[in-house]
Length: 425
Image (cartoon, rainbow, N blue to C red):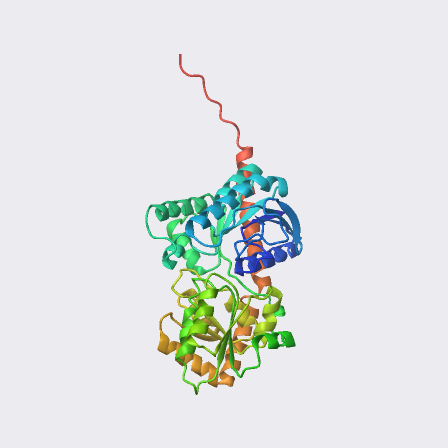
């Protein structure tokens, strides 16, 4: 069976959706699928098409074993209107170039957000005469409203209707968290749904991956070392980490290394310089392959969200579990629930400065506690969040959906044509 992953984001770009989709694609290949991807020319997060690509030229290449068709778009760095233009340009480009770049699939698996990729999904579904399954990793526009990117009004009401329309026309919907799926079930109870969480390949992580290059990168200053590695974005609320560092008394050990790139990087750098925060070191983003080594030379993973975003579960949680790192999580909702269920760290709601400082201090001064929490996280990564297990669940769900669709299509084809009787004279 042929599966086409339709997504705006894919490696060599860095980010949680890129890693998740490429690794699940490889898992599905192992399970017998022929997998292709239709995506954009890589441009995230810089907003500029990567130098190795012609900005106006579609291209076909291989990402691992996944044949990947890339189409042009109008990248955008900042600004809501520019981002909308970027999203619509990719949808239009996918419709225009997709049928010529990719073979007809049996099934489309469509990554949202951006929500407007649904236009491309519907059109390509008609062109190829195949169904699509919508994968929701973020509830939009709800999350955009929570983050203050857009205000409630005519545009968001239209987007909500559009969102439900895409769900209801899909063969099924998958979502990366229970909160996402519960929201969809409330609003579209007739839609078939399944939770497909993010996950990790535990084999790639562990103390054995530590190397000298990673030790040099984080520096020789005394620890314990609390590391954040990922997008430096608005939703992450990374000012909370700087506020924590500023509030710590001199007798509490510990330091922070923030590794990544994104729209708030310059803001963070300015604060570190202006406020004189010697505990905090800001480092450039590293290649995806270097993350296991970075985590292996660290003592605690610190993961932050600036607000309650329904359904948001940072993928860094699963990587920290696999690396046997205790987690200091600044978040609530399902992300906090998963850390508490695994008993692998502390979860503090955003804005609770005293609780956050207390949790930090406990982790900083107690190496035995760090070890116990790290071992528990590793067990959860292996037993629950192993990408192989998640890939097998996705495989079974997609096959079942496709089989049901083929059954309905066969019944339709086998139904005798109804003849209209002649109208009465």
